[in-house]
Each structure stands twice: as C-alpha cells, then as structure tokens.
Image 1 (cartoon, protein in one colour):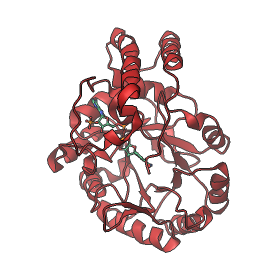
Image 2 (cartoon, protein in one colour):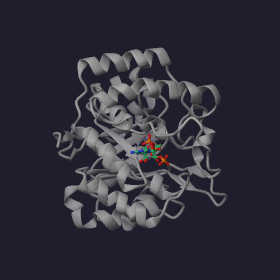
Image 3 (tube, helix red, strand yellow):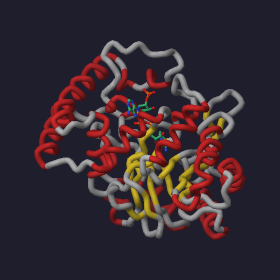
Image 4 (cartoon, protein in one colour):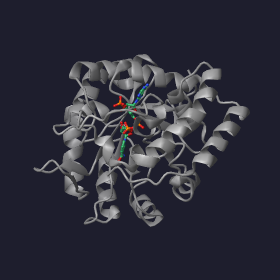
Amino acid sequence: MPPLRPLGQTNLHVTPIAMGCWPISGVTSVDVTREASLATVAAAYDAGINFFDTAYCYGYEGESEQMVGEVLRPHRDKVVIATKGGIHWGPDRKQVRDGRPETLLKECDESLRRLGTDYIDLYYLHGPDPETPVGKSAEAMARLLASGKIRAAGVSNLSTIAQYEEFHSVCPITADQPHYNMLQREIEAERLPWCRAHNVSVNVYWPLMKGMLAGKLRRDHVWDPKDGRQKYPIFVGQEWDRNHDFVDRLRPIAERAGRTVGQLAVAWTIQRPGITAALCGAKRPEQIEEIAAAMTWTLTAEDLAEIDAAIRDRGEVASRPAV
Ligand SMILES: NC(=O)c1ccc[n+]([C@@H]2O[C@H](COP(=O)([O-])OP(=O)(O)OC[C@H]3O[C@@H](n4cnc5c(N)ncnc54)[C@H](OP(=O)(O)O)[C@@H]3O)[C@@H](O)[C@H]2O)c1
C-alpha cells in the first residue's frame, strides 16, 4: 500500500484514493441495488481504501450516508469519513442550496445519526448558497469544530478566491473538493495554487470524468433514460467522439504496463502535485477493486510525456459544474 497522505494540517491521514459514494445513492446511476452498494463500500475497505466521500443529499432519503455508516461502523477508528451539508432535495426533487448556519447545524446532526457515529472526520460546505455569505456558513462550521462533532472543515464548489479567503478567515479550511481530471483542469490556474499555499488538501471529484475515463463506455453506447450523464456535453456529439479518440490514445500506455485506462486516469491524478486524493465513484465491487489498484502504480516519465501529448492534442474540455 502507498503511504497515507496528511489531510491539511490535521493529524488525519488518507489513502490517495477515496471511494466516491454518489453512485450508490441511485439518483442518477442505473441498476443500483442496496446489496451491491453495501458490497461496494465493503470492497473499497477490503482493497485498502480508508477514505469515504458522501453527502447529506446523496440519496433522496440519505441512503448513501446510511449505507456508508452501516458498513464502516465496525471499522470506525480506521476510516476517514467525509460528508457534506448545505444542499438538500426540495419537494419537487430539485436540489436546493441552503448554507444558513442553522441549516448546517441541523443537517450535520442528521448526518451523524444516519452514519451512526458521534463525529464526522471531514465536513464540507457542499456549495455556496447565493443567499448566504460563505462567512456565515463558515460560522456554523467553526461551531461544529468547537463542539467536536466534526474534526475538520472543508469547502466545495466555491466560485472565487475571495470566497476561500472569507471562509478561511472564520473557520480554517482543511480540504477543498473541486472537480479535476486529465481533461478538466481549470483549478490549476488559481484554486490549486491557493490551496497549496495554505496547506489545504485538494480531494478531487470526477477523476474518471464520470466514467468516460474508465475506458469501458463503447462508442455505440445506448444511454438508459435514467442515466444522468446525458445532460453533460462531454457525452454528446463531437465531444463524445473526441473523448473516445483520447481514451484510445491512453489505451496502449495502460496496456503495456498490464493496467487499465481507468487505473491510468486515476494514477495520473494522484501523482499531480497538490492533489491529496481522487474521489472515485463506484456502484459495483469490481469497479472499486480495479480502481483501488491504481494506488500502487507510479507512472514513468515516458508514460507522463505520452499522456501530456495526448492531453495537448485533445485540448481542454469545457466543464459544467456538478451542483
Ligand atoms: N462536491 C461535489 O459537488 C461533487 C460532485 C460530484 C461528485 N462528487 C464526489 O466525487 C465522487 C466521484 O464522482 P462521480 O462518482 O460522479 O464520477 P467519477 O468517479 O469520475 O466516475 C464514476 C463512474 O465511473 C464508472 N466507473 C467507475 N469505476 C469503473 C470501472 N472500474 N469500470 C468501469 N466504469 C467505472 C461508474 O459509472 P457506471 O458504472 O455507471 O458506468 C461510476 O459511476 C462522487 O461519487 C462523489 O463522492 C462530489
């Protein structure tokens, strides 16, 4: 197993791969079963992953937090559980951002109950609430830290560096959670340098570009109507073709090392300077077992040069935020 990485300035240490527990909520992924979801969380732990990423809104009724809690309860002192507050489902099943302090305090208590634990290792503000200054949300996070209900505070989906500064001046940020992968690298301009300068961990979502970089979606894939990915431009038309061309460039690099494209995409991500962990979503044990093996692969200079050339030829992909 690779060495654990420190989480910001805390004494918490995490594996460079975390299990992303959004797919098991079944909100936008297809063919999700409770049995397979529980088995996937257990498989991640058995594969050596100690870091789990969920959220208050993962599942209309908090199913993801409940399942994570159920499986990991016997191993509580050996795992780092991250969850998030500040987004919930409205009656019309649309996401609502609510970062008011009283809401965050209430949601944190509900997350603790669902997880069946008396502390959360890392609690993120899931996204800024346009009606509530992030400094106000940070006040609630500071109270949660002081009460011991959370061990560290994080942010996700902030829009400006000014928001980081505002939050950080009220409550120390231990970790940021932006999206990042081989083709979506906007954070390298400002956010990543800010985090590195402030010793803030960067735990990235979409390392597999929502499955595109797992290398198993065929060009003629027929989307299930419930699959939420069709609304993202990366899966449509010319972008879809160009992303497949890119994956085809990665394939021989992975194959000559006896590895898979998904492992390549994740190994690349966790080797990037300033990245603490890649949050890898899965809904089946074999998916996370495959991806977990990327923790033991160090890409060579030759691999990296070829990957850089493929990325350059593909060009950066326009992103659309998750929330
Ligand atoms: N803070 C935020 O706002 C935010 C937003 C998004 C995500 N996140 C977090 O980040 C995590 C990662 O994001 P994500 O789950 O959306 O995307 P991701 O990790 O880039 O991709 C996950 C998808 O890739 C496919 N996959 C994974 N392993 C595979 C394998 N071995 N073989 C083939 N396909 C494989 C699965 O899709 P299929 O099997 O369905 O094809 C899976 O649902 C989330 O689970 C969540 O914890 C946070």
